[in-house]
Image 1 (cartoon, rainbow, N blue to C red):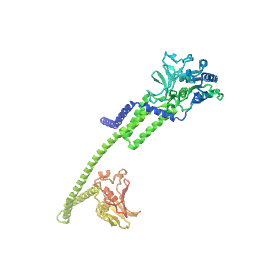
Image 2: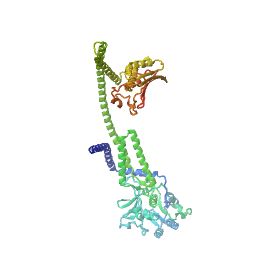
Image 3: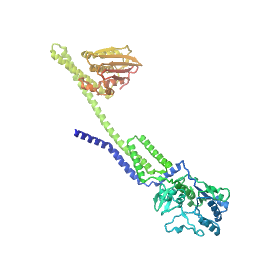
Image 4: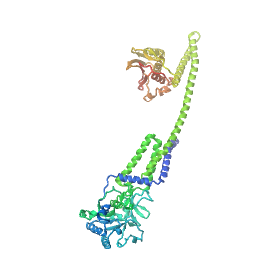
Length: 627
């Protein structure tokens, strides 16, 4: 008992191994492909997807804490040149008086025209108001902070670094500004200093969402809003009385240029790769607003990318090798589309940046690499199936020829045996009663064998499609009567009564020999499998242009699970196999074939223990077709 259980467990384990071995190989292939793809630098493609997600965002709103003041070509026209130091000083006093939280000059103030006295006065105003900042486009190393001081007469003013970044030598290498610097050598950049005025948590730069180290800087990604998202003014309008300065209270005001003279004053953005897509001033506003909201895109760790890469590779390979090509392609496209929508959704609603380039590339590459592999496998299988089918066809042909040849050769000696028994039985004086009984047994055995040989011959003709109908107009009632007369002896031997209820009918076009064989097989089966002292009912009728012939017995019936198989060649039910009744398993198969050859059909109804009813339907106007 324990040995059998152990053997069964080993067999089950072996089957599991065979079942999961292909899956294991596919996983190994998937992770190998994922590893190779992960070695590719797809920063440019992934940044493009990032830009696409930035542009696709719908619900965007800034904090309304930042406003921009521009010097434009119209400013120069109206003021007959750049705003001079005296104009700037007067405007600065008004802005300070308005209660602005911070005022940022993102212009080279040392190059501002004006007298020396006006410049010194303006410098003094800047120095006396700590909420005024002068932005520098450069950063300095520790110990070189003196380089941040401006030139005479602004030598007492220290600029605050506010550099712009662009993906040139690193990252996507497309010159787009996607990042901002938070600290350089642990010193906060201007954007971070200004954001702290509204968000005190940013005193620790590591509280900035999505921060990462890059060389000696702490950086994060800018959560860009749509272009022109911040309220802006022209500096010449602020010199008049048209503007209400009270609206600047508690605001960060950034003063800069938009002169279309120097590309250094502009940046490329995720919204546009044009060299003048956005001014530096607006970029500073987006950076500060991102920090105030602390909404920088959160790029997921690298291991998440590896997991997604391996998962999509494994799923793609499994689909390619297990599903139909068209269905598999649609499924893969659906998965990749769903993954894309998922990434866009995370970006739009949660600000989470999932890298997409590697997983999407894995899906397409795995599909196009493994489709040829699958085709090779399927072609090999098709070739093997073709060869096997060819061999089976040859074997089937040899078998059919052998059966036909053997059957023909058997009919001659059987006919001789039957003839000699008839001769002996005709002479009543030549044999004793015991010998006559033996000769009867020989005769009946020869008849049984002849029936079997005829069935085999008919089967061979069916397999070789050698039947051709010989259509004649015949009365079905006469055919049934002939069949019943032929089997009367067998019925009387078992004391079975055959009751015929036949309606008068017009002649029907049939092949009489084949149809008689159909009825003969059904009647003989009904007699053989019925118990002694029972009845068999044979009736017919015309219905919807068809002749319906029913043969009902009171035999043991046919089990429900065997009903779908009884017309299969060589099939015999379990009860028939266990009984002494002999049979080839071809009678019902040939009956069904001959009936369908006439364009009809044969059906059976049976309840186990309550007999069976076979119904033969033959068309009255169509004799069938050649086989």
